Image (cartoon, rainbow, N blue to C red; front, side, top):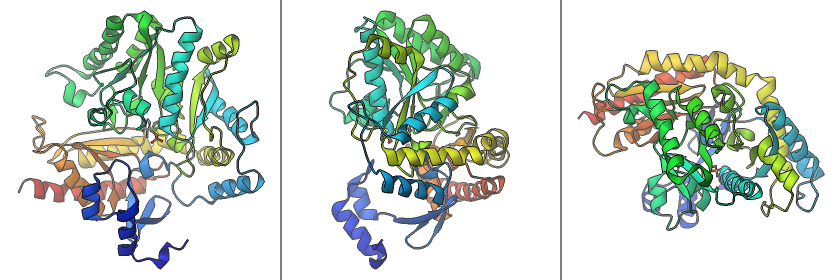
Length: 458
Ligand SMILES: *Cc1c(COP(=O)(O)O)cnc(C)c1O
């Protein structure tokens, strides 16, 4: 690499001149200049100034095995030398996507035995939507094509991903969504439960919103419900325990398919390989990407349940869909090596038995009592901290997002990378975090909260 020949300032100038970043206010970025992350090791990333930052977001929810894994680099190198690319169209394929599909079927819930590959979560959700509608058409019910999703959902950023998702700001720029997708309330008790309503009752009410949407359209017109088992980008919103069993019951009652978007929760984050297993629910499709390769290569895998797969095989007829890089051999080789590490190091079990409970306890004991913390919540290694002005009334600070951004900036200055969604701080660290890493994170976050409170109450 030759970037060392450039100063930070030169790199920032080149970046500003030529590189449009994702999800960015480009005017803002031009004024601030971008932060260059230049290397990483284990749980830490380092910027061009050599500053060490504890990465509480695993990149973007993906680097589950941490940074600096030679095995993954070697798997890519070996595959590139032997066969860098060949497609899976026209009755061909290559060995690595085939073996990865077998491996995924082994770790996936029992009814999921087929895999459709893409290069991103957005692509995989595009596949999922097309596949589900294709399924009902093959079943002789082409009008059964409505999809029910939720406000605050994040399902990617292509037109399909945005349409499936429930982010109002994104919809505002869509200028024509994919038709026949409706959104209902999310299971977000902290803001949406009524005074006096307990979590259990709220969970049932949030699930009832899905049933109401089915009844409104008529069950014969509803193809599927799609949801993230834990809403990630929407602010780590964890549904009450009553919610998912009720969703499953409703989907079965009206013969509506259940599509899970596990792009974040897949591959160990909640203490099982998939959150479907953590929550005990059976889905028809499971979208996965991100941690499938721990972010070392772009790859997505849509896991397809037996019900849909058997119809595809029995009815036949070409499914006119796929990507040049579906089943990319290098990405699949890296995924196999990544799953191998997760297995050999027992990272899923570690989250379930050790670090997940430890994180939950640390957040409760050390941060929940803080003056500007309204609630902490976590499942496995994903967590949220609600920032409020008044703990009792849950009143927020003025200017939505300003308070959490203040916490985030102090955290960053203090060597702690975490994200802010409106006024919710979120964490989704690599699964290699130990109890000691969690202690370090809590200390840095605590300090950031103190400094933010001082600023915000001025
Ligand atoms: C990140 C994400 C996506 C989109 O994945 P991309 O690889 O960015 O296209 C979809 N769904 C969920 C739940 C995600 O977190």
